[in-house]
Every structure is written in C-alpha cells, then in structure tokens.
Image (cartoon, rainbow over all chains, first blue to last red; front, top):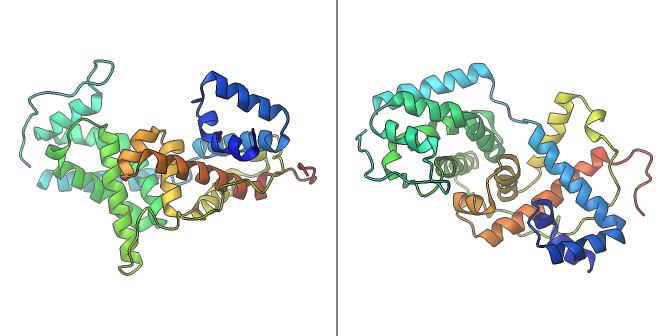
Length: 77
Length: 213
C-alpha cells in the first residue's frame, strides 16, 4: 500500500468505518511508515481540538435577546 | 400560522418518536412554548454555523433570528423524514450564504466556491506535534488560533467540517443538509481535515525541530 492509498482511506479509518481486511492492510502500512502515523495522529488530534473548543460562543445576554426577539415574532405570525 | 396536526407521526429507527417531532407537532398546533424549547435546544449550533459561513457577528445574529422564524413559518412543510435539526440547519446555511452574498454586493456565493483546489490532498508538513499541544497556549489564544486557521478554508470545506466533525452529523445527513452528494461530502471532509491539520502544525509542531525528515 502506498501513502496515497493510505490517505484515501484516512477518513474511514478515523471514523472507525473500515472492514477488517482493509484495516489489516492499513495497520501493516502504518508499521513501516512514520509519515502516515504522524498524519493519522495529528489529524485525529485536529478533530479532537475543534470538538473540544467552542470558538464561536453565543454569550448569555445576546442569547436571551435573540430568543426573545424570535419568540416575539413567532407570536405575531 | 395555521395549526394542523399531521395524521401520522414519523417513527425513528428505535420505534420511539424523537422528542423534537413532538415539539414540532405542538408548535404546529400553535404552542409557541414548544417552539421555544427547540430554539433553546439549537440556537448555539445555528449561531456557530452562521458564524463559520458568514465570518461576521452581526450577520450570524441575523441568521439565527431569520432561520428560526423561517422554520416556524414553514413548520407545515417539515416532512419528518429527516431530523428537525438537519432541516433547520439547511435553512440556516441558505440564510448564511444569502448574507454573505449581500456583503459581497451581489457576487454569487455558494458552498461550491474555491473547492477545486489540490491543497490538502496530500500532507506536506510531516513534523510530529508536541505531546500536549494545547498546553502551550492560553484558552483565548487557542480559540484565536482555531478561528484563524479554519477561516482560511473555503466556505464549502468549513461548513462540511463543522457539520460532520463539530456538530457530529453523519455523512448522509451532511450531504442532505447541504444538497451535496455523499462522495462530495467525503472528498471535502478529507481535504478540510488535512488542510486544518497542515495549518495547525505551524503552531503545534515540536519546538526542537526533530520532526520526521
């Protein structure tokens, strides 16, 4: 398996969506390719970091104001 | 708004009616308090998606209001064969793109913009990251890095990454929400993930320069 073939399967591997025979091939490739090990680990970390940090938080005061505005308009429908 | 109860209520795969469907049915019957629960449930996510697409705080606020209001007005059109959330997000994505278009004085904006790029199709930065990269930065500095990094992606990659990896929608739900094919979502997700990884490497790579040669 080449690195290009490995990268094509990267998403399915990250999403745990790989059948056993293909998984064995991917793991075999990883045993001999440090580049792909790094790519797999750092891509997984990228997803984890974005999941665990709320970068566009809706502040409580603004949230209250938006909710009131939405519901006031709904009541007029 | 006309209040009509559907004759049949859609069932989820478990056989249970999703709580959102019950709230939608109550809201259709004129119960604004039921709709309020849906607003409280999803306003943060809608705001986040709108911010990611429009990159503008005022526009994102307007999108939250307009998307929920439009959803309320169109509740009778909600078929119940998809999740209420994915239906709502589809409205919010369209509203966000419309706002973006206005900012660009009528220039066409779509989620297909700038996606025909080879960037990110293969990793170039092969340096490993430090074991706990987040520890190097304070919380607000970290948020700024993540904002700056994702803002550099084309909108069509950003929105796929946010729906799939941050919001946790399935590939099929993301495709349905954005009006894309499943292979298009998969292709964009892979490139979005790889581009973000590449860009974050500038901040998180091991400082002693001992990455893989």
